[in-house]
Length: 165
Image (cartoon, rainbow, N blue to C red; front, side):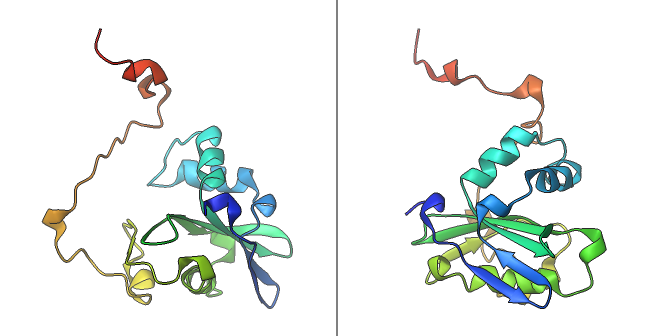
């Protein structure tokens, strides 16, 4: 199963809805937030669109307007990465972040996974409520992090892997 094959789930709480229906996602809202965020500053709309296309996405809506978002990248069997979680400033204070996390963690295709991961600078308290904790063995983890990846002059060419000359 891939992200595009999951069935749509929806949860309602008063005037708010959490939905995995990608046709409801307002890409302008998601891009506007992410391109100004500390973790995706300067990200292009095209990259955001690809990230939405290739992930299980959760939109938060208030009277049909998008006010929050999160996405999960997973093989639906062993691992999931949670990223791009946000609630727009005017909609904060209603418990939407916690409710969004409840909806994500209870999604039927994300049950029984061996490992979840995420990266956060400032929301440790929220994620701890769902069992996330600092790495037990950080020396075992490696990363390839390219903070310049979203700059045009830094984009790699598909021809970069043509083999030896």
